[in-house]
Length: 532
Image 1 (cartoon, rainbow, N blue to C red):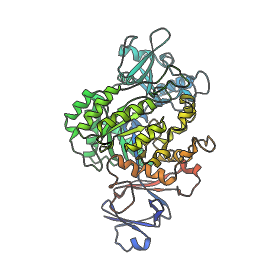
Image 2: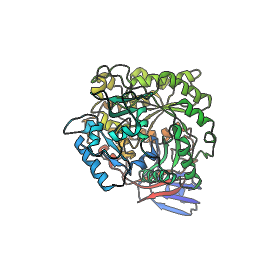
Image 3: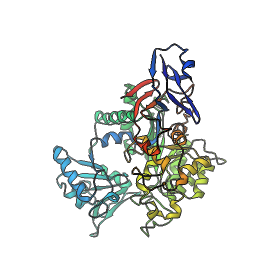
Image 4: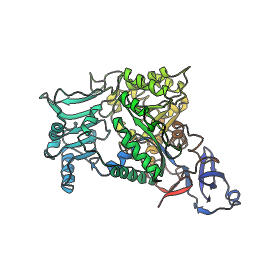
């Protein structure tokens, strides 16, 4: 099958744009002028009418199944107060009166504009219902709150503890419904397991949405803990039934080393992976939490919360043991680390697995938000890939200086500095924490501004990235994490024909309009998988 794209603005690499492209059997064979490419015979010719063509985006860290699951949950992102959360919950329950458990996600106390700006408690959720369990997770996913019914069903009391997590107590010495980090998993256990068909539907809904946004590859954390067999089963079922259109690389999370050892003893470690649509993936760990919830692990106390340094989801010893076991088995590790304390711990753990300061497994850091210059230099010198989420600036610029102080904030979210230091960087969304739309993400990387255009001139403007660098981070940069930088991420001969056609020229429009760009066509392996 031969396909020609003509009359376009095809981004090959910085300062290299071509008019046309020849694709044969899913692989790019030639790029060049219309005249050069049209000398070839083709089964299909696509007229681009001057539109801009980019490589398909590769989200370097997200939760694909959770995106699909969130589509059917109670959406709390619009809540501007605790009362709003309560009313949204009541309305959702009224429309879905057969529910046996109410799940919701997306509230953020820092966005509350009336009433108290605090974390929700079980007393708030009890105003929605005391008859069924309710679980509402904060937008970051690192804090969740349950109502009294949920706590009763779990038999949680003031003596219940979870390693690497906290069940908060109220002024009465009893659990107030707030769970953070590893304790969130305990609260989620009150939610009944979905059957295989429902799990598959979550993946398919999210896949369709991602394709509409120009995402052709995902590095996705959907496999977790001792439930890993069920999730891997669904992934292989999708692959075997040719339903996995998007290229999928799992980031499997095992906080407990015994769960990781069990995985290593199963067929999933060496199962059927073609390395193109379904890859073996890497071990994903959590070292800390989120900045917004003050569970990110800091070296010093939070500026706005003395005596608080965050939460260690893994001790240094647990982290090292997991990294060592992964390295012994030739498995890449990527670790969620947001606070500088977590980042310091992760760098140290990785370095102990390396020989002569080399990083052959490409162990990486997910988020890597609060950093000192010394840490950035160490990351670059050890060639540790960093998976950034520029869209986090939309929220975090409002709080970061209050949380960590101006000096440390000035070397944080240092996308451009780390790029110039030579470290491999890539972009992702952490969706559904944020929407997986790549264009607001690129906008934040280029402007260093919130979606509303603030602050004027951008937050730490020296960290602004060029359009080309931002696109490269989202394409070839993400491919590097997977050892696939010679397979996908560029529109060059020999690369997979994964590409998108835009409705606007991202290289010439005003930066403020980047966030509004839409995808007109998405192709994977030379086949149209989305079109408007």
